[in-house]
Amino acid sequence: MPRRDLHFLTGALVGAGIHAIESRRNGEPVTFSDLAIFSLGGGIMACLPDMLEPADHPNHRQFFHSLLALGLIGCGLDNTLKNGNCDERQKRVYKVLAGAYGSHLLLDISTPKGLPIG
Image (cartoon, rainbow, N blue to C red):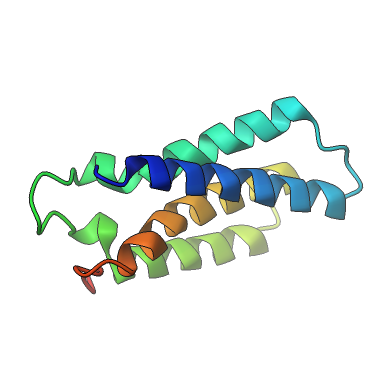
């Protein structure tokens, strides 16, 4: 994971940002403990693609590093947000997880290797 620190930091910022925006939108206080939890969750989730497909060779990017995976994450998030059985906190968690995972793929798409389609 040559870019692990960048992926973790980006995911942590995504997690904190989504939590802060959603908290403000819902009129909730933004607490340090919640920011820390959502940041940590985002950071870990942003590292998940390289945990599933370690960067041990130049062509390590397969399904979990693909445009298909990014699309499926987007579809899953859309379905979750439209689900009447999920409360706002659950939806926020899904937004953070999807956004952080997606941040990893968006960072990797800008590399010379890019991302495979599927």
